[in-house]
Image (cartoon, rainbow, N blue to C red):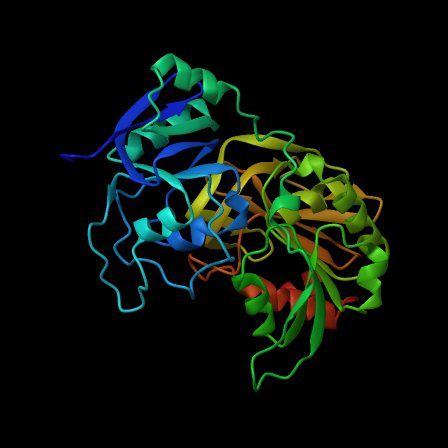
Length: 382
């Protein structure tokens, strides 16, 4: 590491990890989270759900496949900072268009290398997610760095979807040769690019609509269903979207929510949401589908969860409901559905970018529900 400038990863509990400057030098602040995926770093960087977060990549070697314009999940990098142990010194993939470090520098993302990312992950696992800063070439003392980190606004209560939502509606059509059979209104709270593409591949015309879209505006396009995307922030701050979902449920329009959308459905049904100690992130999270008994390896990025009953059905103003999916790591509720109203949600990412394809069937389940809204998920699953 000769010639490298020193850099520091500073946590709000006072713990400091020393490394070396990488990508852009300077300061970066956010919530410290870790991702356990050994691949998919480009999809992580461009996922709007990571807005205001500094991501620690647990896998030690990152960047060897470079980056390209096809695998991006949005138009820009959203992470506040990036932490790796050993960035690749070469790029060796036929699809690569530039190196990871070049992309980070062009996007003005501050990074740090040469730190023990597994030790950082263990620290976050034991102490919980916390505020963090990356400092390089700043001239600050250790005490000054800790003070700056402790002034960061925490994630609890954060309203961030307005930063990442699309500014105007757009349509993703089925690919050539695939007939259109359904229309979906997808509310963008930080949607990943792979999500509307996955639905379009099933013959769904996807109207991606911005945060602030009203129920009347949704009804004007006469959708067969409403989809609520992933996104950053605290679901407790999303009161307007919660009310929108309640209108959709009352009208019995088929509904599907993922990740942030799952948490908002939970609040629309009357459940509280709560901050997880360190969240679920990465592409290897085991979940059991209680409707089929199948265990799926799934892709996650969430720091909040729904406080729904885990072992039995529940009652809502929209009729009976039940928990459909449970995390096998910590028993967090990972899926909900209503019995008599066509609505369901999961806490993870079925579009599998990057990640396993175990949960991709959920988009087909949504399509089946839109085509047969009175049948219900119980009969579809059978």
